[in-house]
Length: 197
Image 1 (tube, helix red, strand yellow):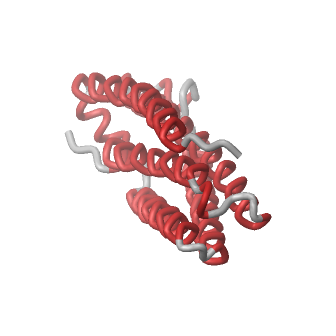
Image 2 (cartoon, rainbow, N blue to C red; image 1 turned 30 degrees about the horizontal axis):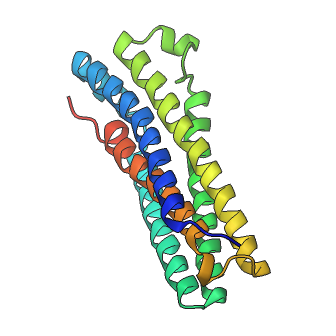
């Protein structure tokens, strides 16, 4: 099989750059509105659970470590350990999504979602805060799902012997994507969970 590891890496970095532009634009939008409505953003942030956000941060950082360990083990021809670490990453992704689901469920129960009757009676800044919260965390959750799907394919390929230390570029690129997912969360977490006026 013909391999072009350099081209593959370059293609992945270009793709990741486009993702950074997408989220960077949304972060810029957040910065503009948080500067305009600092007190309302701070008040709205009090409705989020710092504990759940912190746990999710630890879960994602752990998942990134597991991806690195998976790549290292695959390159050392320790496929069993590579597979176990990859499964650990996927489990972390599912835990992250479950916690995010609990958070979202709580917001919907209390009417803290865009265009709800509760939100229509809130100050404009709080409405914008929750609109951005659902937009950014929802888009991030989609990226977590995509990443978990890619890593599941990599795990299957390791299991079946299709992915080896000789063609580890597929796992490396999937790992790069996963690190981007984690990096984005590192920005989302303080913007929404640790807001001060």
